[in-house]
Length: 438
Ligand code: NDP
Ligand code: HSE
Image 1 (cartoon, protein in one colour):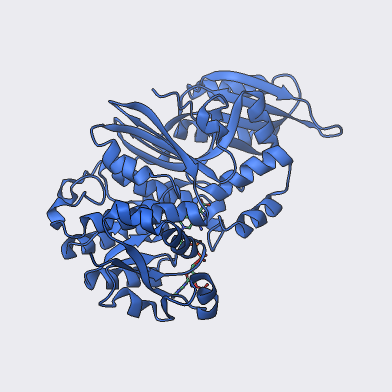
Image 2: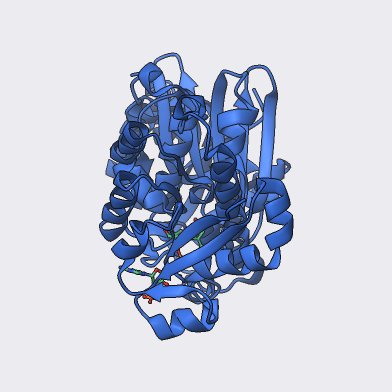
């Protein structure tokens, strides 16, 4: 049978890894796909650099549009990144009748609704396993493996760079900047690493997972997003004293009033498997009503790990190539005419437990003032700890762990505590998730 011809757009970390794994596992992949899958053409800006990666046999062009629309190409693999040129390329490929495979979560989070509508119209597939959690087949799990379930919640470590930074800072005491530079050298970080640090990359991935889990449209603008830049090493230390690890989590949950969609540093009990996911590894916990909690773990970034997901999509698309589009698995698990308009909850309505750290003057009556503020807002305290000041400083650290509370009540309490004359600076607030499978 004629091979399936791939047009590779981008020969960087993921493009290079995809070429290498396709080359190395060529026969095994063909046995699975039913025909060979070959990179027929590739596009890059620096052709000399790309030639060194691809060798001499693949046709190279610095005009990515000519590759995306070339009549010999069956599947376009968009591995350029970004949202401008990538969007135009993907839409051009779709209107030329090509299937598309992409690792580009930013593109899907911003323009996914438009891209999937165009693909549906043309009867082609847009596959995106590599866009969430690198090599972990979480898209396949959410879309197909868990299809019997009502998904109740999804919570994941879905950014390798920030997990690498948090792990290294805790284990080696290395500085934030030096660990970030290492993550960049290893190819984990986005072209703009503030996407990683600020939680935006995780938000991109979370909105895609929420669409798959709940059959809702992609809604990047509704994701509450908080990164790791504000975390202090003392919070990592105090969290450990209470038996927690801090991880940047993407969480989406269906509750009675709507859907929660949030990315933020989170305290997780250290005995949970997911609390022990270190380095650039990712893990996603999915709770289904029938199956209960399930956990997916693996490399969330890196050349060959991500290539593994890209190639899984190439094989899937190859297998379905001749099928009637009506028989394709829906891009987002639910049929596109059966999407739900369940609202995304504003962050103020979300309920969670909280870690609060305040710096206050150490004198009688101060704790009473603080507990009165919390009590007036019906915020119940689970545990409290006082740590003595560094020698010569007038303030002590008070750490409070609350029971389940509404975020807007905690916001109000923080405002009142910060307004007390005995309080120094702002209150640190980190959310806590038990992730106990309930
Ligand atoms: P890189 O920066 O390593 O590679 C991007 C490639 O695209 C480079 O070869 C670059 O060429 C090429 N390129 C950029 N613009 C153009 C253009 N206009 N025409 C032709 N080629 C172009 O990025 P990654 O491989 O790391 O990431 C690619 C995608 O995969 C992104 O969407 C990223 O978010 C996603 N991803 C990355 C992961 C990772 O671990 N790195 C994991 C999961 C997803 P040149 O070098 O010549 O400028
Ligand atoms: N920058 C991303 C991360 C790459 O660190 O997880 C994988 O999507």
